Image 1 (tube, one colour):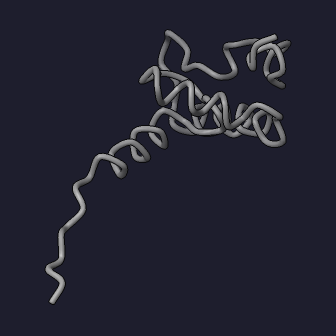
Image 2 (cartoon, one colour):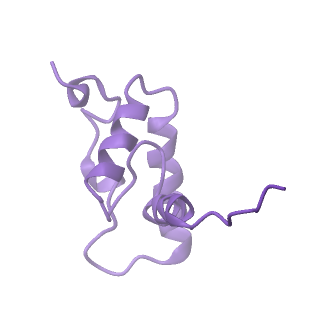
Length: 88
């Protein structure tokens, strides 16, 4: 069995996790993402899901409890160069 077969989202309508094709207001988006994240809370494969989304550069939807924007911020933070400090 793969990690996907153990996800709490397995039997839930995928539209909860992805933005609709038509326009979604910020309030609607926030509510949809909160509901999707509630499914992710306590999911036994949340870490595997997030790792897969980051490795695959998944740009849409809620994966591993993080929204598109949150994953972008996480990866941008990881790519930020670290300032080197001279040690005396």
